[in-house]
Image (cartoon, rainbow, N blue to C red; front, top):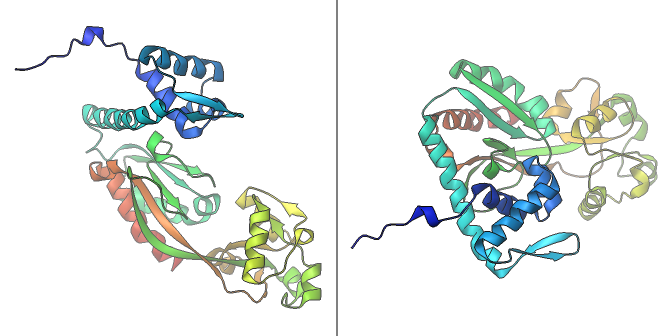
Length: 302
């Protein structure tokens, strides 16, 4: 006996489900509204409408944030599966999975986007002349699940099982300053010299200081009078002689007028991950660019 669904009785709005999904992932209405490019009241109405449609409460308000209720947590996996199915349906319907044209978005940190990717772009152009490459330069981790990018270069592995990731290389960072400033501060293994040295800080600078102290470099807040969350500005400040900056070794060593600053530490090593959505398995353009990056990035870092 075959059971047929009476779809005329199903009242379900995908926009409401998407609003719930992004709110659950972002943890607040304000963050979700920014991610979706809509106003917070509009988003709130869509989440409330889904609660009315389903007859359940999806969130509890905790402080300024939201936490999923038990019902909301149970629903989340199903809505994520719907989002995956909607993306696959769109790809199949438009035939884009086999076409090597259109737009592909590559997310990378500001340093990688500005210095590592540009030499690779002509190779992508040679292999796929009809492809438009958009670079998403950000130190935040782009959300591939919501199509903020198709491929990402990251220094941390992704979480969850909806993404494909490959560790392609190890990168290393070190301290650099202008030749004049490096000569002026001298050997920072000397405590008196270290007290006089000025470093350029980054976002979450307390974490950076704690990490350097754990490695044996006794820096304090007094060593970091300048801060920026932009890595390109960080490097430019170092090149202008403002203080000591930390960048990948390949960038610092290849920049004329910049020198390593001796501080008694080994170079700091960190992994390089190449991450893509599971669409990688069906999209020729994503596979082509992914494989090319997997080959060229280690060569450039090597």
